[in-house]
Amino acid sequence: MKTIRVSLEDRSYAIHIGSGVLRSLPRLIRANGLGRVAIIITTPRVHRLLGRLVSGELRRAGVDIHILEVPDTEKSKSADEALRLIEKITRLEKSRKVFLVALGGGVVGDLTGFVAAIYKRGIPYIQIPTTLLAQIDSSIGGKTAVDTAFGKNLIGAFHQPRLVLSDTRLLKTLPRRQILSGLAEGIKYGAIHDASFFAFIEKAIDQILALEPGATSRLIETSSRIKAGIVSRDERDTKDARIILNFGHTFGHAVEAASRFKITHGEAVAIGMVLACRLSEKLGLLDAASARRVSRLIQKAGLPATIPSFVKTASILKALAHDKKFSRGKTRFVCLTRIGQTRIKENVSPALIQNLIKER
Ligand SMILES: NC(=O)c1ccc[n+]([C@@H]2O[C@H](COP(=O)([O-])OP(=O)(O)OC[C@H]3O[C@@H](n4cnc5c(N)ncnc54)[C@H](O)[C@@H]3O)[C@@H](O)[C@H]2O)c1
Image (cartoon, rainbow, N blue to C red; front, side, top):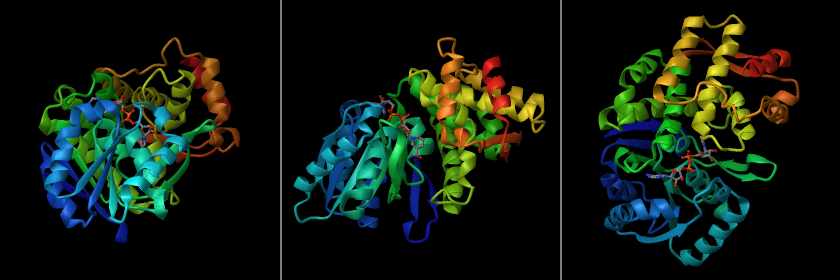
């Protein structure tokens, strides 16, 4: 088991990673004094696949368990769903101290964290991420949110979990498309921060795609360490350290929205990273060989490196125009200067961005 610390004074916590780390849950619950009643928030699919395993470990900690299900869709990240959960939690709480357990992917993690942040002005919660994306990225950092009709993650709060348990065994049932979606974020961490990690992914891509425990654990561990370091320096996204995590995301979000969410977040980020590399190249920051290396790894992984033909150029440009950063004329892009190193470029000409999209 590998343990990584997110250092945030009294909000510090540990991320435990490895095959079988779930077995440490009873000990960790007791050590963290988390409470007597665990309310697991999950989806029907994850409940069916992993509910018994996780409940069994929680029971060994001597806590009472309740399981609340939310529908298995991004639509569950809503204020209505959060209020529905709070109503149920109020009924279950009685006089005993409760804590929440987010058991699922990023949707369940963001929603559970948000409920934990607002219920009684904050109660403890732990993350047991079950998708590669959630283990690599979304379970760490305390950004919690729900979506509104006006945009994604518009209502939210910073609320750090008390513990993250990333057990690679939980990923066995994950569809390949979801594995790829998480892998895209892993490639991002290599590209923005760590050239040797990028080279490791290039070399171990087949083992990672087969979820071989050693390679998968290293992927999650290194990504988590990079994210934990960035979050420790910039918990609330105010010091410009967290911005590099957006590499590929401005383009990615626009392509994702223009596809009407028919492509996964990771697929959109993969396309976005290739576009961000091409932009870096056009701005004279990145050499062509490094840009090619990023796009080659994305293709080798089986992720898309170009905008799918069904996504219209006009829709992407429209989605970009809706992007707050873009429409206010303050175009800020995370570029690469080489693999493992970023540079933030301000005031990139909108015409340059539009041409890049038009070239596809
Ligand atoms: N808070 C953050 O810092 C942060 C960072 C990145 C993304 N996010 C958010 O994360 C969300 C996306 O997360 P996601 O990609 O994990 O999607 P998701 O939570 O929708 O999960 C994807 C699919 O995988 C299924 N699944 C989950 N675990 C499984 C398992 N073990 N076996 C089989 N199927 C399983 C789910 O049922 C779902 O259908 C978005 O809402 C995004 O905004 C948050």
